Image (cartoon, rainbow, N blue to C red; front, top):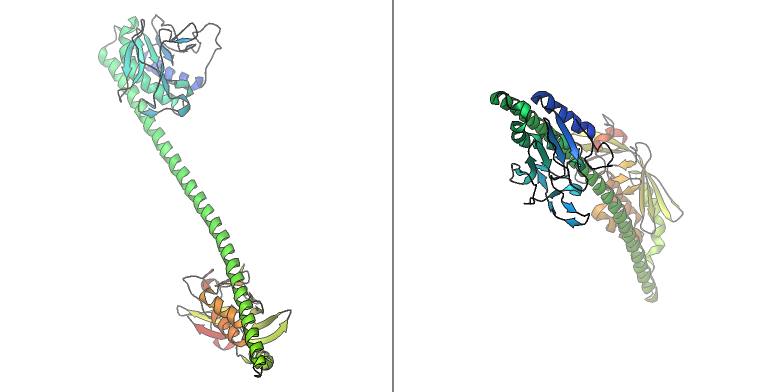
Length: 391
């Protein structure tokens, strides 16, 4: 295997030399023919005579450029060679021509001109050495499979070899080439599948991040609307109260002090107090029945803010960030009842708002829960120790 350049003063060696040498060594051993591999400066590699077959990469037997400027042979687009896609950075080939000294054209299986033969010289018109490393051996083998049958009869040392013996060995080499192509295609399909799976996973992860951010944004917006409803309701109530005063009617808010006593009288409430602009409640243990099983959700602390905010925390059976199947980090997903709760808080109807929230805690809905109720412990025979609700 000769890896020298034909151009005077050109550096010895070339990219992927070990891949080229491995292929040529296999063909030279099986065919019992010396092989050399050459590249040319400016696309020109002089034909060589002798008892060896000479492969010239991305070159012609006649200079394609004269005087360093006149392009006699143009470069043409060649997206595929021997049925294999060429690299986007090296998908040009030396064009077919009728210049003096040109060889016999070689067409691949797609009728594309990929090479030329001249005596014992096989020219490769596309840029073999700039292709992806995994495809270089396959492209070289298919080029040899296509061109060697035209070269071998011209070798003096091979004229006495029986034709059937030579054909058998060429057939064996072609079979090896196609097996290598199939293996490479399997590898590429696997890599493409893995790349697709990774892309899908990244897209899903991106969608998850987007939805989490959007949900947090929407929750903040919904809570802001709830505070606005509570504030507007309070202004409406105050306006009605002042209007009644102008009409000389008694202010019903004078009896509002009884709200706290009514809260403490609710069976599900263990403690109720007013502090820092909010009503704070502690509930009895909440038990939920789902699909024939009881689950202990625990005791809850409720903060009902006068501005319409509602916060719920689990005092005994919190699971990670989840206080309840419909409560995460203290923020309840109240759904359609949120506006009603905000309106009740704005009207200082704390008893009615508490009853709605207690009913919310006693309800689980698998269609929109944050965490399935199955993560909470089963209650067993603890029905008498808490508030049981069937869903």
